[in-house]
Amino acid sequence: MQSTETETTKKLIATALGRQAADLAVVNANLVNVFTAEIQPQSTITITNGKIASIGTPPPGALGPETIIIDAQDDFVLPGYIETHTHIANVFRLHDFCAAVLPHGTTTVFSEATELGNSLGRRGLSWLLEEAADLPLDLNFTAPCFSPTYPDFESTYAISLAEYEELFQDKKIAGIGEAYWPDILAADERTLELLALAHRYNKPVQGHSAGAKEHQLNAFAAAGISSCHEPINPRQALDRLRLGLHLMIREGSIRRDLAGVAPVKELTRESRRMSISTDGVTPSWLLTEGHLDSLGQKAVALGFDPLTVVQMLTLNAAEAFQRQDIGALAPGRRADILIVPQLEKFTPRMVLCRGEVRADQGELKNAESDTPYSYPPAAYNSLPLKPVTASTFLYPTAKRNQVKVRAIKPEIGSMVTHEVTPTLKIEQGNISADPLQDIIKYVVFDRYGSNRIARGFLAGTGIQHGAWASTLNWECYQPTVIGCNEEEMACAFNRLLEIKGGIVVVDKGRILAELPLPIGGIKADLGLRDILTREEQIVEALTALGSKLDNPFFHYQTLAFTGLPFLRLTDKGLFDVRKRSLVPLEID
Image (cartoon, rainbow, N blue to C red; front, side, top):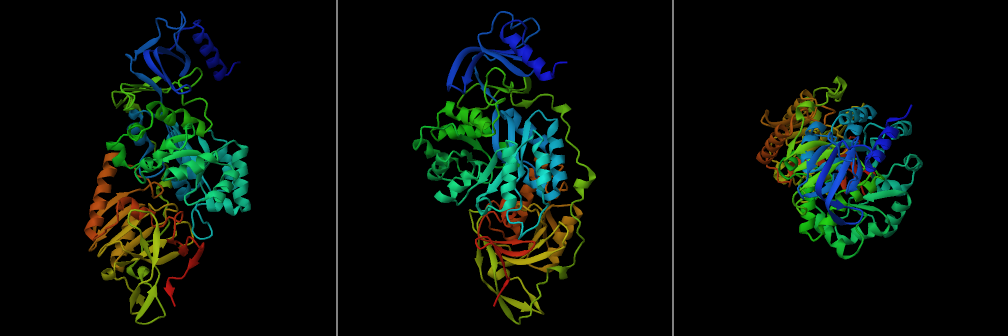
């Protein structure tokens, strides 16, 4: 008995030779050939069983009375766009992401899965793959690279090597995500075993090499890292390209580096190892800016040739993940096809996925049949913590009157933090916050079994009253509370437990704004517009508290992120990223 794949191949050969009529054909196409960077006018693309059988002039017999004909009307016809690095495993549902990006021409996505992997462990990854399974968008994920960044100094769910091997057997696990260069260069046995396992399964390992220089980059590449999305200027980009790394130029909601990196095109004539990725988008971006089509427009405006940009969004992206079934309009490849009226605009009027029309004139087709995935009850019960009282947020000390402490000061316009050392009053054995000095309390709870509570201080946020609590904190997703007094902090934390995770802003005992993220404490079961409305309310509430951090919805999420310097608070205490050691809160 012949396999389905064998049957499809037989039909493709028959259609290409004119012995069997195609299921569908796109005619009168200005076909963009990404292999030769040329436009082939008056082309016909024949499609059978969701794959391309032929391009160019079809032989007699390839178009029959049952063949569905789509007239491109001399518009440009491109391969579907491919996202090479993003984060879609938190905040919104994949169903809503698909509905937002597919009409803009994105047909394949490679995303990190760190968020649900860290907050729910191996089972979270299984549920994520189930959520992605029946969507028209081709969703692929990279497994977390031994998150968290520093397992000796912070907690999350751990994934064993045996579980990694199990994951690698799933074709939707496309590789390892964001391997941080200090971890790779430390070359501990566990990390080397994971790299070897990934390479044994032919899974690429994406890199995170921010701050790495010449010798470090060489060692990073020698370990088998395949790509990096961290360059912010042309020299950094060229350094990585010269070592054979695939450059994923970042332009998204969190960081916009395309303009800074674009001059790399003046330093090299070769662009085939470059793609453009978002590294994450917000509901606001998805609802107002489009997706990869808008990145293509920006690249052309920055001087990239339109055909080069098409390659970056398609063929180059596919080759970054060793995919030969997508990324081009060629025989045998999957029929992910865009009909684009203006090449330099990149926005399609029609989108085909696997040979079926899935979007037309910006509207998703058959959307009524795409129902959101339902996560199991266990995903909604990921915070095994109990309500607290104000006393939980007292900072006991043996000192009297006053004490000098270490406080974390976020840098405006950056995700970097710095250490400052204010002197604070001691009242009845408790170190008090001092909003007049712009110093507030900062507490992290461990949700993964130890019941640890770590205490610190934040400087320079501008917050003068109220409190903020959240589980949406990179990358451990620990419940975190900041505030000026203990009663407000307890109110915010207890409400956070009631909504099973998310973000809460309170003032004077009143809930000002909240975003419930009950799935793993990081993912909503709301639509994009509802999420956006709540995001805007949170920003408004934080501003009312006095917050002066830029992009506050994101900036507060990054405070605990140990992937960047310098001082962070984890569930195990204050962590000096540069020294890789815990440091005491009080300074003698």
